[in-house]
Length: 232
Image (cartoon, rainbow, N blue to C red):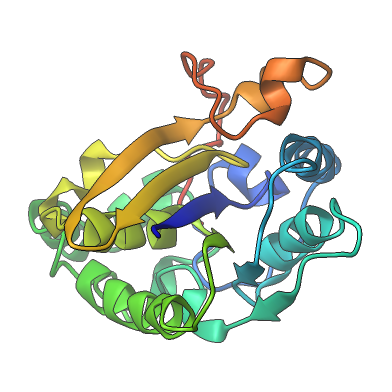
C-alpha cells in the first residue's frame, strides 16, 4: 500500500500580511490565520490521518492543533524543530526593500543560486531540505503509517516537495505555496511518486461547501493578498 503525504503551510500571520521575513522568529497566527486553521480543520474532518507532524513554531503548531482536533479521537500530534522555516539570519523581521538596501550583495547571491544562496547569517535552501527531510523520513519509516499530514512553512513545504518528487532545488522560486494551502503527494512503493495536487486552497474560498471538505478537491488558486507569500 502507498502513503499519502499532505504538505500544509500554516495560516496567515501579521508578518505575512506586512511582507516581513519571518524565518525562525516565533510569530503567532493572526485572527485571519486562526480562521484559516479552522477552515483547514473542517476540510480534513472526514479524512483519515495517522499522524500530524508539525514545526514547533507557534504559527505552525496552532494550525496543526486545529487540524489534529478535527477528528474524534484527535489525531496524534508530534512537533519537530527540524521542520522550522529556513533561517534568514539578519533578514528576519525586515521587509524586502530594507534587505535589498542593507544586504544587497548577499541578496543578489541568494537570488542567483536558489539552492546554495545563503541569507546573511542564515542557512541555505539545501540545508533546510536536509534537516526537514530527516524529520519526515523518520515518520515515513514507521510501520502502518499510511496518511501523514506535515504542517510547516512555505520554504519547508517547497523543500519537502522537491525531495518527495526528486525535483531540482533550483525550482524553489517557481513554486507557490499560500498560507493554509494543501499539497498532496502519494508515495507508491516501487513506482514514481504522484503529485495529486499543489497549493490547493479551495477550503478557504468555500468553507461551507462539500467540495471544500475533501482533500482531493482542486481548483484555481485565488489571487494572493499582500504579504501572503512573504517567507515563513
